[in-house]
Image: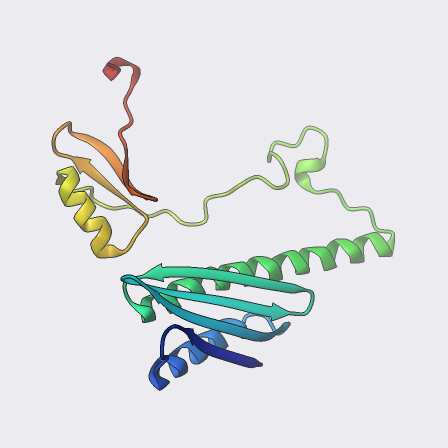
Length: 187
């Protein structure tokens, strides 16, 4: 597989090139149909932006991530592309299995497609992971600091001013706050 690492208005160090190439190679191993990858690194104000485009047999995938650290940007964009590759591979496998059933003349019904089935729709969304945590009481300013410190897009916390679970999230210019209430608590 061919991997190209370049910088736009930015001199890419040898260590950074090696790191990006190694990480892209590990991600590309998930799907043998990946032929090449282009990695472009840019700095813009205080942001370190990494854009990765993967070219494969019958598809192109692109991901971009911006953080305050170039290595972190590389890691985060490749996590996105890894998820996309796994999803792409799953779709290809699903296509192959449905094609083989259609070609063989077999008629197979899924449990959810049978009359009176209680399993629900065939492609119902499902929860793949549950993250449980102890919500610490804090102010909105403290929650924003935690959000920035962890580099997440949102942060859930126990608002010390109203004793409710709130979510602070990043917006284009600033932050947003989700403050759910029950009907009894409505203003």
